Length: 128
Image (cartoon, rainbow, N blue to C red; front, top):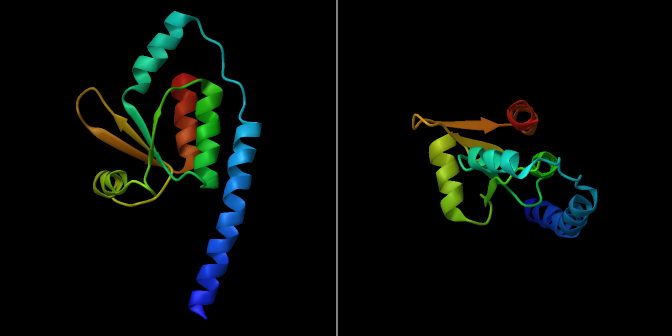
């Protein structure tokens, strides 16, 4: 019975994944406009950020939309398909849970921010 349930949900994911990705592409907002100097400053600040995510996770899609809306160039790391990123997330953040924003501070310490709402709030405060 467990195998049947497992395969059922895998089938559902196979059907929904392309729909979710197409929906993300069609509904992603335009980014804010900045002067080239302002954008260069934002890009420099984004160098210390990395988003650990799964491609079809709805909460990750929510964060990626906010990143696009704010016009941020944040590196995305797929913790589902790349074992090295999954291991880094486990070791650094303490759990394999996405979305997770890794914030590297200038003093060398690293902060791991979980939950899509918390990440979006932090991004909006920092770059909004």
